[in-house]
Image 1: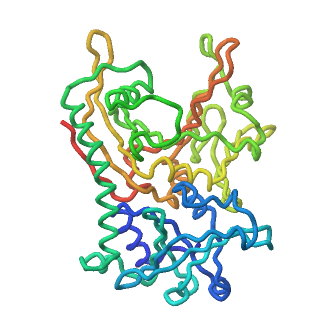
Image 2: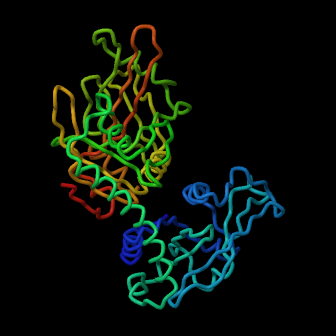
Image 3: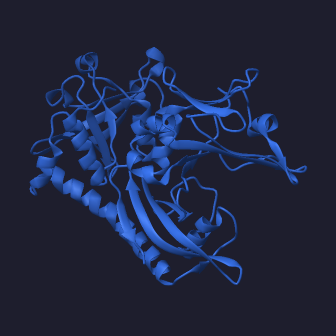
Length: 391
């Protein structure tokens, strides 16, 4: 997809601020002529995550076509449409999408922003519409729908904010456990959230990231192991065997890797934009490149994990030798700008931490790799955030 122009960027920022999560399609000249568009990987993931459609299980041919009620936005509101989701018999059944009536309102290379509400799809031509002007008109159905979605989203955020405010007013809370994960467990326990291994956001679609309020502490975005099928090394154990070190009873590899320079283990990150991969390499020429992540996979993980996030800071104190947490403020972010992710990796703002350990005869454990960002740089990855003081 081409770079966004100024109007498209403005429209995207406004929709993001209104809690409208959109995915993008861009019809080509050929596509408009044939009334087809490729259902891109981000678009397919968007439909799958919302339970609307799974192209991966869809058969080929017209008999397996799925029709979704849809609407196309124009200056005065919406016009009725239908989305046809299908995989043709030809060309390996590449996933396709088309909206009836789209040709009347779209030219080739226009950027279409698509969002979902009540399992129906809504199409906004971000190249032609001025969302700012539309939102001024309180009688416009587009404005009405955007406000409804925004109110619903803010209702959950306000509910969670109130709960954390009440916890903060209790004063220092005794830590639930010890170590790096204690603060997260303490907040979730206080909120009545049961600890589990689910990768879904913590509270009704909102991710919780709590941290000790220390200057310079990096914030964890997500954990993601390499794509072992594409990597020279096929497991965390293999990475540990080559670069680990002995500490007491543990054989471990705890280190940070950056794209700016090699660390003490001789490890460095590199982005290969020709093949859209993040690669971890060793200065040892006999090893070289050994771990690979697909950038699309990292982008999807970032979007999935941080659709909406509360970053909760806490001061720490020890009472009778036990750590306690006083939650002090929240930074509330939404909809990360994935195009910035790669740049921030290149600039060393986002780094990767290995947390691999083997104790005696126990299996190798891997808590990462953790993708982390400098705390003062969240504004480069997310649209303008909201900040709440708790005390």
